[in-house]
Image (cartoon, rainbow, N blue to C red; front, side, top):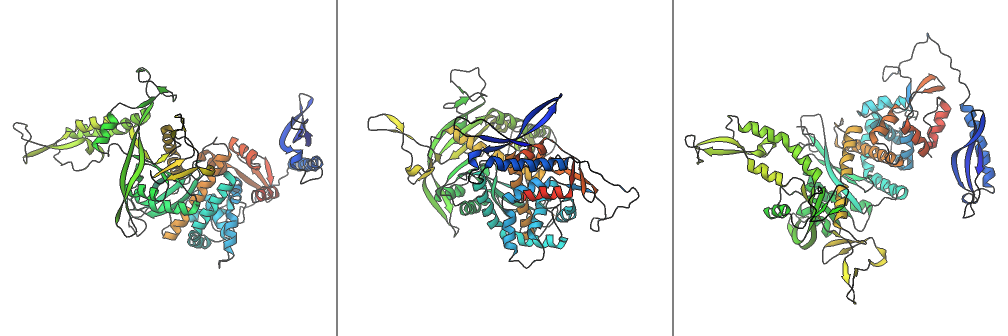
Length: 626
């Protein structure tokens, strides 16, 4: 390997890169291995940058030759395998995929965060090592805390602590949660230029395999429809898909009741003057809207049309005023009746009064709240609603022909399309208090079908407006002073962005919510965050703290790989990246794929070497901790 320099470019700069020679069909050729950079970028570090990197190239060549030397392994066929005292088994397979997790863990400074605080704790074990083990296992082999401890031997990191240290740590870690979340946010700002002005919010819950409730694990509306105690989690996510902060609530807490404490929490953590909160219809309440506005922030919330007023339903059904678009996003003229409509919208301006409950529990009116509503229809959303409803309609039709006389007193499942009808069995005329039968409610079905695909997006976010200057010409109003990204309009009660904002911009902003829904699927499916195998509240808090850190690391790995691979595929590749111990100093690689190959180019971690020495693996892991 040697250093090659390119001719001077148009800016009179010389580019350096590593290259090597190779033979192909009897001819000697050269190929570029790695770009170093321009010579002038290193003159402040080295007197002669080219000479310095030539020495580096020689050392790299020497190390490569060392790696290519044949390895001799002596096997003793009759030797008996030793048992691990904890697992009562022998396993010679170790994981090196955790090196990528370790690199992100250390890049975020999580090790430094806990090392600094460990000095003030009266503990004999390494708290940072415990946290690393819990994160490694949550990503690679999620399970109970005992299972995590038993799996520690497959990692090359030093993890010489007992099981009690793991459980004791679960009571310590939650004390540092808020400080750690603040620390992680600062790291994301500095390393990934996090934009915190738009935050997506949603709520999910996690169940416990227990029968009895307690003050924290309570029965509520389970997302998995399980009749088990749950806890609620509220999560904020930024526009790039990185989790920002979270909190836990008792299982019987209504979704909309989590927004106010969470919005206050995130305002303190981010220290941003104005935020825009994006959430679905579960957060749409007068209290939450007033909470946003009284703190001079913006919101983009959706509203249910079916649960709205008759006036709203009539407005939605009225075809006048809709802007229609085809599948390519091109607007369709009103005269074009042939092109299929993919989506359409129209805007309603409105100023209303809303109410907020103060700290003493009294309702207080907030007058003149400015906002506008976007009525949106999507062909895909309409088709999905029809498919989702099909099973309930089919069951309702069957039930309407049965001889059951049960009174229909709820709207769950098929009952939504059934009604109890009182009638005279001799004349079949409807009368009061005689006999009842269950009939199919065709009128209800017709109403639902007329609203398929519609929902309302409400917001108080606006852009720069058109104004008429002194010459009578229309122009865009002046930008806010000092180039501020947004400003609060006290009179209108709206947040104005320092750019033109169209209804399509608001719609696109709202549609970013899919990322947080997909994030919850990652925590539940890939990270197996539920069911939760701990019972004390502080240990539950610690469990979800490790889940949050694991989620953030997985999102960073996705980002570093250019969103080319899903978190599931990355996780599977890291999990399979194992070596088998041939003797006390030599290990053979068992798995290698495209994901691991690309991680090499991004992180400099070589997962595809045929054989490793123990020292080589230690050096590889040491690089991840710098």
